[in-house]
Amino acid sequence: MASEKLFGVHATALQLRSQRMMMLASNIANAATPNYKARDLDFSKALDLARQGGSTEGAVLYRVPVQSSLDGNTVEMATEQTAFAENALAYRSSLSFLSGRVNTLTRAIKGE
Image 1 (cartoon, rainbow, N blue to C red):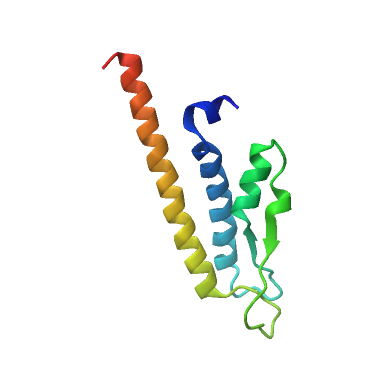
Image 2 (spheres, rainbow, N blue to C red):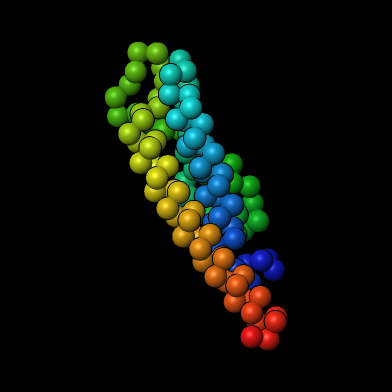
């Protein structure tokens, strides 16, 4: 991939982190929905699949709750909020790296 040559694995990681953030946000939004099954993305597996050019669907997992709820919902807010915060931090790290890389390339193109 051309973008991987320029940006390393961070471009792919940023896309996957964004996908995972949407999943976790959906889990949080559906915390009170009966029979809602919380999902998450196995980031390492998804990254491997994406780098091989495959679909990341095989990296989507359903969360197994520590304590089951009476309405069949598997969302546990503490788990989801922690995963969301960790993912947001990793997203920001990849974004910072990419931003620095783009700035470096821009300066190189300008001859600075």
